[in-house]
Each structure stands twice: as structure tokens, then as C-alpha cells.
Length: 176
Image (cartoon, rainbow, N blue to C red; front, side):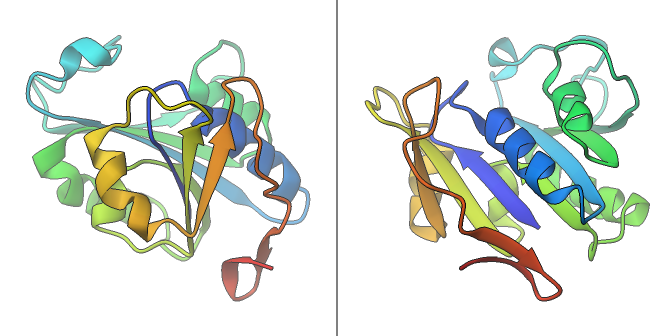
């Protein structure tokens, strides 16, 4: 698994996910995963749509649509063979990811957007995207920065870090 975290919201996680999916999908079957962990009193920061974590501890949805602007649709259109979205109360994250791995083989080639999941899983590569001019860094990101294999700098529109040396081989994700 290649995991992408963000130091703040709207920093470019999906843009990077799509770039990497597009780069590796011609020769690999890529599965995309977006995890949205909800902390107490955190619902106001996340769109709820048709999903309610007030009623359920977690929801796993496989994205099948190809039109629209949701991040999962963007990942699907970038070339991922399957895309999943997990919305989970943070204290049920382990239960949710275990259920996901009953649907998808853990040895699959997965590109995942999540900070929270890094507490439970050590991916092949863990990337964190950080603003060139950070104003606010999420607590979850501060705690995980030391675990990042690479910190990618973004100006909000493009990336200031060369991530072309991210490679995938039969041995998994690595930096060349």
C-alpha cells in the first residue's frame, strides 16, 4: 500500500493520488481507497451526503460512478480498477479496515488517502503533503510527520517536490 496523508485539508491528496494512479495503472491493477475518519464533534468538517456515522460506526462504499466531481470518481477516472470510500468513527477504524480487507486482498496494489490509517498500518510508502506556507497543520499530521517516507510540498495548485522516483515493483512500493 502507498498511503498519502495531508498536513491540512484541501492540500492535494486526491490530485497526487490521481497522478500516481494514472502513472501506474497502465501496467498494474490499482485499487484506490479514501478513508475519512470522524472524530467527536468533527462532523461539521466533512460532507455527510447519504452516509451517516451517527447511525453506523462505519460505512464502506465501492464507487461505481464515472461522472461527477467527488474525489473517488476522480480516482476512478484516473484509471483505478476499483475505488472504495470508508467513512468511520475514529475509534472503529481497525474494525472498518479489517472489513475492507475481507473485500479486497491486502496484497493488492492500493493507493490510499488517510492520515488516521497510518496509526494501524505500516504501508510500503507513506507520503505527507504539506503546504509551502503552512498556516495550520492537523494534529493527526503533526504526530505522523516523523513516519513519512517523503514530505511533498504543495503551493495549493501544484507540487514543489519531485515525486517521480516513487516506483512499484514485485517487491512493493519504494523510493528509487
